[in-house]
Length: 151
Image (cartoon, rainbow, N blue to C red; front, top):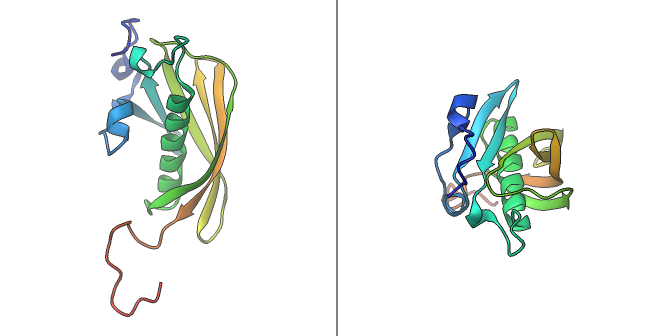
C-alpha cells in the first residue's frame, strides 16, 4: 500500500482507473483529463520498490507502457493496439509514497503503426522518459475473423 503522505489523488482531480489484466497487479492506476489528452498516475507504495528502496524500473516501464498505450488508444479512436517497441530512459529515482505522473504524445501516425513518446514526473522532477511504436490491430485480439477474410 502507498505510504500515507497526505496526498489525495481524488482531491487533485484524479479518478481511479479500473484494473484490467496485468494492471490489476501493479496499480492502482489513476487518470485525469488534460487538454486533448490524459495524464496517468500511480501512488507508489513499498510494493513497487526494489531492493534498494526506490521504485523498481519494471514498475516505471509498466506505467509508461500503460500511459503510451492509452495515448495510442485515444489517438486512434479506441482501436486496439499492441506495443512493438518501447525504449526507456531512467533519469532519477522515485520513492515509495510519491505520486508518479505519466503523459504521452503521438509523434506520428501511419496506417498501422503509431509513434509515441512520454515522460514520468514527480512534481517537476523527471523520473523516466520513453519512446515507442505501437501496432494498430485490425480487430480486437481473440475476435474471430469474418469468413473469407484472408488476413
